[in-house]
Image (tube, chains in turn cyan, blue):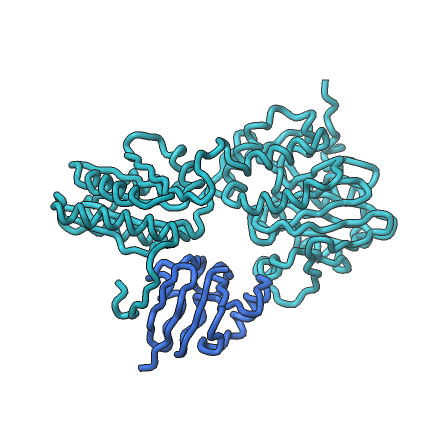
Length: 426
Length: 95
């Protein structure tokens, strides 16, 4: 039977020893079911914070959500005095990790704050004061605690611009912030003792880290060369058993699932449509034909009625360009289109090519609305969309072919250099 | 009214626009790959490289300078949501 860590003695929260010099001083939140609106959790979460004792200083790594500050301070007090604290490291400034920071700064005013370069403006906004002392750090910067040394790794956008990791060199321990974390609450704390948290680990990655795959890969390039005895994330189980496995899993999750059949130099264009009377479908087929005529563009055509949303999200993540065909019904694009467009926050769409077309009966606003949404999602929309009233004529079908052709040319960087006047732009 | 000629190198499009127009207004209309976040000069998402005609854009404000510094932007970079064209020839591309 597992030996339970002694989290409290006579009701008083206690620090948990991870090594003679490192303790967990976090808090458990078993009743949480919904985190940051977007994440569910079936058994709560933990807010992990740590204390590191060196021969010439004591460091606190992260804090907890404000409502759990009592547990955090009690655990801290069970292993250290406030006047011993020389260093406070914030790996991530989200309120679930900085809720107890203002009070910690009040109790340990001598401690120096270490944050990432990109955290500076956020820290000011969080603390609502302009004048306080802190040290912004980058990869390779170190802070000494005497016989223990903390080294910083700049790992931005995992999952905020400010995020960083901190490596305790002498103990080969990585304080990873939200990276390698998950929402899973278990009093046994350690990955080799807790219940099955594999789903939570993958779910957390899929919703929190996936939009930033490019940055995950950059961070892994810094983390993979490190010798690792433990990974101590800011949420969920403490990874003391085979921590490298979790690094490998992140590498797998940040690579493409299936080997793509697309060769170097080819670009992919996905055309999604939905149609009530077949008019938008005819437009989609013409756009498809036009795009196919451009060499080295691999075009795919999908009817939104024929699939669940999540496979399309996966396809869009890997595509170079995406187009939507939507009718306008009651002054709006139709729900299946919005459903897909509202599911794309988990993937990076930056600078992909976007385009829209559709048939309408009276007003035709749907096309413009979807174009605006694509711009909002950070796609570029270089060619104004095509709207056709009810049944397309042969001439209008040709316009759709030309539209598809121009989009494919744009994707390949083959559109002619153009000089236009601002007044002529729609 | 004075006009500026702005080339978006990533899409090979040049636009003649009236002085005072912000880069964001033009680049969104022509579909350049410069991407935008807050559109108010705070988030740094639209950092753009100015390859020609730096002096044909308005000077960065104190606030824009601060955001560029915090985002460790290079010295030829501007926020496309803040920079206004003044005249002459300008070339930009996404970073």
